[in-house]
Image (cartoon, rainbow, N blue to C red; front, side, top):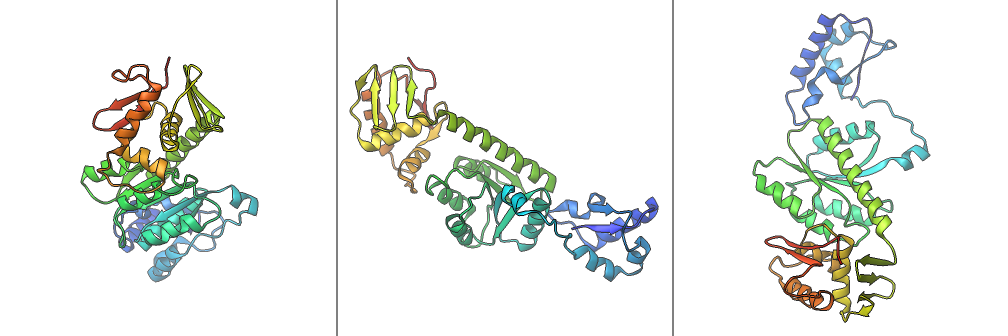
Length: 318
């Protein structure tokens, strides 16, 4: 949203103009809408500030007008990072969309969880980040996050930034444990939202580059070797007897070496679906894998238990 003003403009007149806008637009979660930071002073504006002040209704209508199109080339549009915002507040979603578009993002809005999940499946060009509201009319945002993390591998790694108006810190903790990459509370400053989006995307790109470097035919950890092509595991050249499911489970841990994973995260990655939170069969499979790859089952060095959380695959091994 851009308001063009003619120059030169006395500071007192500009201050009066800002006060009028503040009266027309009461405080809103997008608080910066009422500040002078949104003014765009142009030497070539065709209307004067006095004209705006003399006709408040004209001013109100002009403030509602969308900014002129950016006329980006098709190549520039293709290079824009695509974001999906799942938010039932249409006014907030529109302002976020316009602000992020001006910052160089291609934003798609879904007003419900159902439509958002459908877009994730239908769109050919994948989204680089999902902005997810915690309170949606048809489904809880935490449940939506679980469903996103249970999608096929090409989609379940999409970063998720949660919008929450709830004051309970436990909601944020649960959201992060379910796979959200970051959160921001309402009301929020648009510049903070933009900064968090860029930070999440930057971390995700760095992580993807590291995974690409480690995406080799065989993973080696000391004397332990995991061959993806032949789907075999060996220790000091000796083949280990693992089932197909146990191999997939070990591969999930090894590809995320050094990262603590909960039981649900491990099993969702292997099975690609949601699980019962009380499903403890993962412990049985980990025990059998340890029998095959650990030299001392009572003192494991490769797959370590993080009490109360889950498991971590050691980066440094003998």
